[in-house]
Length: 228
Image (cartoon, rainbow, N blue to C red; front, side, top):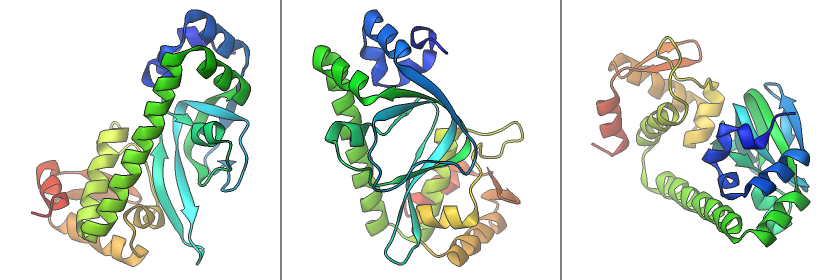
């Protein structure tokens, strides 16, 4: 079992505010769980009894509409914590978490997290800030969906994916999404997403190889995302 005190990823989330004794307690009361691509960590409506700290990999958070269409709301990456909103509110999760790239996680029990929040005000404040940041991001998504055209949303999403996940050794985005998943992120039909990707390719903004995408002209793509 990995030691939380030696894990550099804790500096990326609320765990950084714990004392050495509390970090040791987390280490002694956590499980290491791995997930493969396509696995579901939890589904909409589930009750969670702990939070996940992501050590490696990527997963998507999504919701199904009434007509059964998936809407991807956010992505979870290395260093993020997952499931804390449900644990803190004691409510069922409102999203489904599905693995896009093999995950290595540490699962920390609900009781361990809540006890640390009771005894460590700084940790409690950091967790509250995290929830507030999620609310801010959700508001930005709603605003973008309402105010930006599909082309602008696609450009904005490609820039976000590069900034968040980086690129691989060949310069392609280090996250692979199907055309259906990409269309779900930007809130449009799959056919529209495919057409816009082809348009971006013809203009020299991106390069495509199967599902992989390489950004060629970041400045121009940024201008498009801002409506210029």
